[in-house]
Image 1 (cartoon, rainbow, N blue to C red):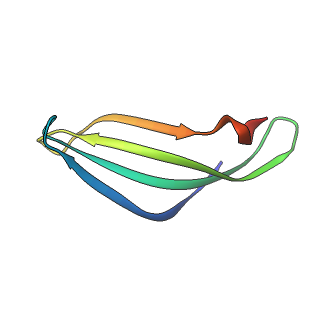
Image 2 (cartoon, helix red, strand yellow):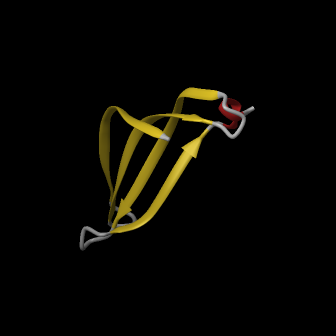
Amino acid sequence: IRMKQFGYPDCIYYAKDDSYVVYSWWIISYEDKNGIKREGIPILLTHVFNKEGKIVNEVLYNSSNHFE
């Protein structure tokens, strides 16, 4: 699997939870078990940071359309 960052990450402060969330877009490419190359699949990574600056949650979002 190859990952390449696309654009620049955004850091958003949420006062309600007193936390920071970093959103970053990535493009992944890979070869599936049948030897078919899958390229240009966009994913969104989110990282939630607590007051101490430690990651407390990580989420990956992607569309299933690229895997059909």
